[in-house]
Length: 136
Image 1 (spheres, rainbow, N blue to C red):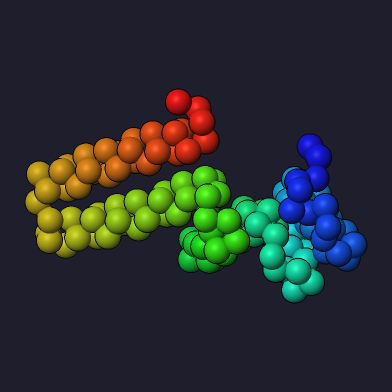
Image 2 (cartoon, helix red, strand yellow):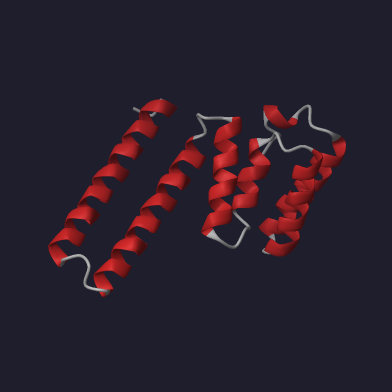
């Protein structure tokens, strides 16, 4: 896997930290990877790839959301970040739905309807992503 064009002109310190973070993430050492990616971001926060990698090693959905939102600030067309944010939104909605259901707030029929809407939204998002990336 080569270096993407946005990393070609990155500072040497950033590249060193970023590559070390990738190695740590690949070997399953998420805490070390997290630390290295955060240090790389302190050197240069304007590379979407480091934010994507950081999202893969943080512990909470809130932290992942921040990473994906930062990616989209740098590149609004990043399909990976768009999809992951949609997925987080859907998970949050389902969690809310389930908690409402346990408390008796939503009927079984209503929960099914919302699930159906979520499936349709996901399918539409995948079609849009395919069109944007030229797969269709």
